[in-house]
Each structure stands twice: as C-alpha cells, then as structure tokens.
Length: 321
Ligand code: ADP
Image (cartoon, rainbow, N blue to C red; front, side, top):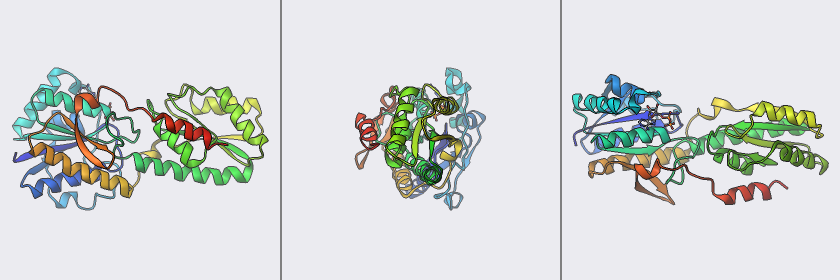
C-alpha cells in the first residue's frame, strides 16, 4: 500500500487528533502517504481529502475536538452512497482507510469493507459504549472533566446545604454516570440500565439529609427515563430537606485536552491500525483488552452495545453510605 486515508467521524472525542497524528507518522515511517478526509463520510462523498504532512499534524496532540472535523451523513447509509465512497477513494488512488469514531461510524467502516475497501476502525466515543474493547478514545478525558465539575459542585453544595442533580452524557450507556457517581462520591446514580425511580432518589437524598450530610449529589445519565429538569422539580415538591439545584454538564464534557491515558491510547491505536492495514487486515477494529491491543471483527464490535460491569453498580451503592 502506498496511499491510505484517515477520517474522524460521529461525535467528537478528545484524543481523536492524537490518533490522526499517530496514523500519519506511522505512515511516514513505513513510506505510506496518508490523506485526511475532512468531515467524515460527507467529505468522502464530496471527495474532500488532501495529503497530510508530518508538519500538518504538529501541535495537535494536546488539542480536543478534531482538526479533520466530523459530520453526520445519511447518504452514506445507502448502498449507492457506499459505492460512491469507494469510487472517490479510487479516483484519489487511496488503497485503504482508517476510520476513527463511535458505533455508527464503525458501522460505516464495515460498510466500506463490504464494498471491497480495506478498512480498519479505531473506537473513539466518550460514552464507552463500544462493544469488544475495554475502553475507547475520549472516555478517560470526559470522565475527568465530569469529576472536576462534580468536585466543584460539592464545594458549593456543602456551603449551602444543597443537593445537586448532575446530568451527564450517555444516551444508551450509563458508564460515565456510574463512574462519576463512584469517583465523585454521589448518593445515587441513574442510568438507562438501572431502573432507579424518582421516588428512590428522593428517599436516598432525604436519608442523607437525616444522617446529617451537608451535601448530596445525584448523577443522572442523559438516557435515563426522565430528564434533569423533571427530576429536580419532583425533588423540590417532595421537600427532602436539601435545597435542590440542577446542573446539566452538556457539551463541556466533549471538549478539552486529552489526558495522558487518552493520548497514549490514541497513539498506540493509531500506529497499530496502520500496522494492521499494511499486514493486509481489513474489516477489523482495534480493541484494547487488558493492556494489549488486538484486532476484532467490525461485524462483532458493531453488533452489540458494551454493557457496564454489574460490579460498578454495587460499588456505587456500597460507597454511598
Ligand atoms: P457515532 O459514530 O458517534 O456513533 P453516528 O451514529 O451519528 O455517530 O454515525 C456517524 C456516521 O456514520 C453517520 O452519520 C453515517 O454517515 C455513518 N453511519 C452510521 N451508521 C451507518 C450504517 N449502518 N451504514 C453506513 N454508514 C453509517
């Protein structure tokens, strides 16, 4: 292979840039040109791609977001769109693609593989919902951002005898909420998976008040059966002792400089993805299992959603005494 392309797709995640940089430099090391496709599958269909030099990926290691930008694109979900994508790659002499992104993006990568383009996927998603890998690029940074916010909220909560409802990202997977609960010292965590009712939250927070706590925190995943404002309103009506405040962290969780962990993860995955592609592999995703990286079929990784280890729900409960 003499020329390959890289793209970042779906929701942006801190560390995507570090992965792009690693792919480009691994390519240079092996004498392979790396093209950057701008705005993911949308850019692929528009033929929006250009050679990335080593200098062009200088100074991006520590930057959040993605310099290649990302976009969502419906046309690529059709067979016609996928054939067009393949044609665009051929027109530019590109022999393989590395896709950095979430669940949907990896499904797109599998579709490209299925029309005959050699493809390797790299998991990047702050939600930690990608099946088959212990973690994905961006999870560690997002979690640290959330913990920073929760710590600050606890300071102010303590000063006023308040209970905070903190809404964090996680549409289908409550990983960030559970970890933020355990590591941020929350009283209770609500995720799409655990079925905690608003009444159970009220009881738990009131109990903390009665036990003499000066603050309490409930962490809610955005994919929970009810939203932050509804929960905060409910708790106010219940008069549980604490004054209630709501903080929705929103997009602050996506940005920011990647942590050391995410930089290393992204760097190793980027270099490994290039190695796999040059070894003739395709239709695979780089998974991190334990301390090792290993290729797993994209078909397997995209067929399921990663579940939270049940032990973490127990930890959250035990530690909230
Ligand atoms: P994420 O990668 O963060 O999960 P999305 O689910 O929005 O984000 O997917 C990103 C893009 O990947 C979509 O806009 C679309 O272009 C492409 N994609 C998603 N699912 C498929 C699919 N089944 N086949 C082909 N392309 C897909």
